[in-house]
Length: 255
Length: 262
Image (tube, rainbow over all chains, first blue to last red; front, side):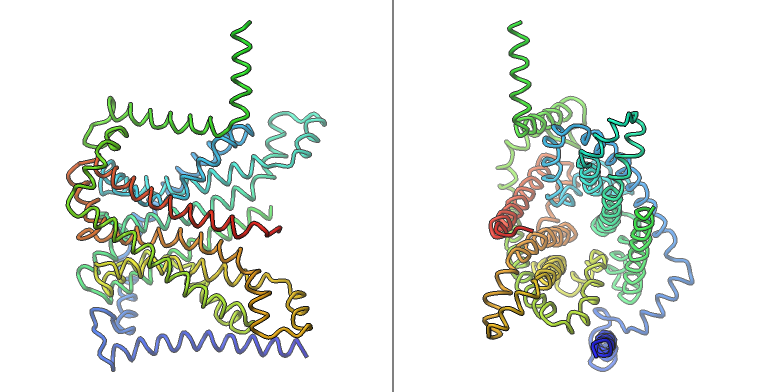
């Protein structure tokens, strides 16, 4: 009885979800065609679709996407290297963990995006300030997870390996690393997500190029249809990148 | 001999007090910053912390800054209140029924996962450059963590407790008041903490984005005038505001979650 009811429930939920999307699109469509919502505020969905096709076909997005992606990649490489190294060094002593971990966690709880104007003052409006803010923001989850990964390995494993005569290298390779890796990978995934978000955000706030800048530029030019197309594009790019990182994390954890 | 003994005493003393070492690290960082700003870095880019501190009053005397700070504070408060109320209502509505959970939770998680920063220009387009857009953007960041944690809190109640209460003849209201509500409180306060983080991020992003009014106007002005003293002062005041608000909700979380054992 319950299996059939379960399936009926599932179908009904899917129907509700589909209905939600359909109502939303219908409201959007009729709002723009029938009820006279201004085209400047809400462009027609059909027009947005055409613009999106145009953006994809003309390759108009390539320079901005390249800049955003290279900024994210640079920031992520920098924060990974520094975060993992600093985290590992701190995790080698319980005392250092007690001194530094609360400090890092405290700084992480401040909205670091506040320092963006300062970074712009230092590094200018170009990619350097984006890379710097992305690195700073993603450094914290990575270093905190690295500390958590290496610092809290079960004592019994370490004692057992030592008593069986493990060398320092063996200790690292076969005890510490496998124990810490899942936690570190989670930190890397979070770090990547926040790097992407903060770079898109800082491009939106003040920049010369990049996807965030393109959206703002179109908003200021009142080209709302094309702006909607770019927003959809940016959201899809972000979703795809997050999916890639999540599946890489899952795959690495399984090994 | 005597010197060695005191050194060991000092070592033990420091080892017992990690907070003291942490304080020394912070002091060292500030000293480094002070030294860097005084001797190594061009003063148009960086200003020493001592001067930032002594010219805080200049920041407050800059026409419009106290007003902008006050407005930012109210935006944070209003956005947070709206997020909590809507988040709680939606969270309960979605979490308490299996059907609505199944139907709407995927939609909520999808929205939670999209980078809202890409639609920041839309918020300005719809709500203008005043406080309304900043409150709305703050709510868009704060509401989802509150919904998600409320739903998780409601879902985590052990079914046995509900069954027991029902079998003893509890009414719907009694079930809510005596079983669901007390079990929700810890996760609700965790949600409030995450919501506060989101609201701070959303409101500050929108404030920085609008460069013609509010905080964003002043940060842009100080940046363009190469006035790091005032810029750092303003940023420090905002950071202090953020830390204070975070600390309040964190304390509340610890206080109201203290009976939880899991």
